[in-house]
Image: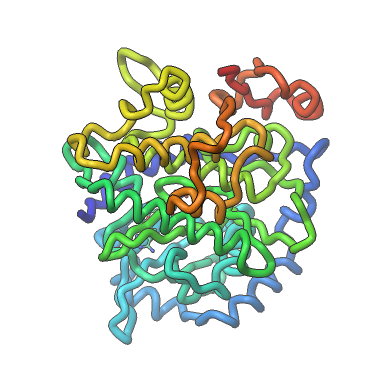
Length: 383
Ligand SMILES: Nc1ncnc2c1ncn2[C@@H]1O[C@H](COP(=O)(O)OP(=O)(O)OP(=O)(O)O)[C@@H](O)[C@H]1O
């Protein structure tokens, strides 16, 4: 199920075009986002809790960061597979040198991940800071990302059964519920998407890439922040106002859940249909009572209909336009397990962004949009 590095590269290039990060000094309290020497020092101190690898150790593990060891490339650097001296297989993420943003992501990732342990979160073994090099060392995930396996090209897509999709969805939800509700300080991931869900040898899903995560003091309901994330997964209110809450992740989870059920990307391009959006499609199908038609044809109708339709409804609840109507992750888990009947929940219009460069906006968003610049004004689609 593992893919070649060239394929990783071409997909990553496309994904990176979809990922964006911008700030607006007028409306976002961005001072905490600017990496300072102090912040860097704090990051280094936290790193002492994890293993500090030497650059040479990692160079040996990856055959001198040889291109044949490269397994992927993300927005902030390249990922290599490597074998440590003790025989452990690891994924080694070398952040792009000299990038200020890279510093921030690096510290954020270390601070978020080095102290947490959960079967649905990728384990960070440690890291290395050596001159211009900033490197993270993770447990190795044999089956790559959901973006490669479930949403890859038609001929290469893995055939995930319904039960596997259900367990993957539940696992991701459990990882998120853990960082949202169980640990202190709480963590908002901020970049939940298919390429950040990695699968181990047993197809157990693990949330990875905490580079954009924000630590959340317990008594805070939200923080104002630079907007960062990936188009298609971005909660509208967060894109519009920079107001980050756990419901920002819940929105992205809803989009991801739709992708898992439908086997289709959140935003896709078709030569005939043009660009189309999964959230919009799901809402149309819901309104016309056609949710079954959304389920991935690759399943050949081999799935539990009520459960699959229930999962689409849960996804629609997670992407509700009003974040107050979205469930918490623990509530979503209860619905997925059938402990709460999703059919008793009221589903209203979802919200989504189709173009961050265009200034046309849908209803309900005027007031919050007024405070931001033209450049970063998203267009909310009036569904
Ligand atoms: N722990 C890991 N085990 C195995 N492969 C990994 C691991 N971490 C990352 N990868 C591979 O490297 C690729 C790039 O990962 P990375 O987190 O740098 O970026 P991304 O999530 O794909 O993109 P972006 O940076 O835009 O979010 C992943 O898609 C995956 O194929």
